Image 1 (tube, rainbow, N blue to C red):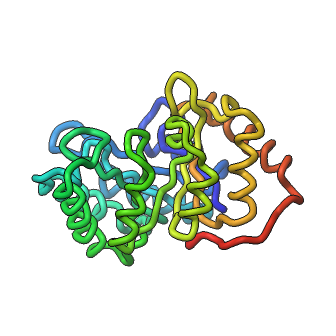
Image 2 (tube, rainbow, N blue to C red; image 1 turned 120 degrees about the horizontal axis):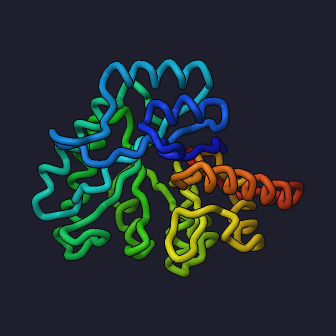
Length: 261
């Protein structure tokens, strides 16, 4: 597996973060917010060229998290689709390992009526058409959505899965069950600690619960694992917690179906 983290570990823009993280991780998730005509953090072409150079020099890849304000499952999703296409076009030369997307309807965090699921699939088809191959689109499970929603999407669209372990912990679901069920279609895994909120340091997770997940990753996953935290303290803590967990489970590997990563 390739270990990575987000582009917002240090209190700076994307490029300074990538420069500081180069050599410390194997993948960086470029987290994009609004990409409207006003304020946005979509890299310009000069920045894209520098990101390519840094990745090449350090053997890194990028995953691109499409803007979190998209409503790809809404009845009128044309504006969201246009914004997503803009991001994919701008970052295509980075040859991202995956484009991570949320499927949300009119109400944030949900996909409601049947027409919203149908709209989401149509949006996926549109975005997949401009990707080198559809599995570069990785649909992420959200805390407010039942994991079974992923099955509905994966059943009708040739996309991959971004399995967020932290969101499953926050819901009280068993991530190992989800990993065993969805790993063959999983390209990216997000992992982070959970307390009063998610996206915290990984040491908040009891060792035995973390080891259960790490054992699956070490044995059977060959994609990107993103420590999805957003400050240096949580990043360093999470790196240390994951490494200690990997050491604890070393030597106990059991063969099983590998991911498509």
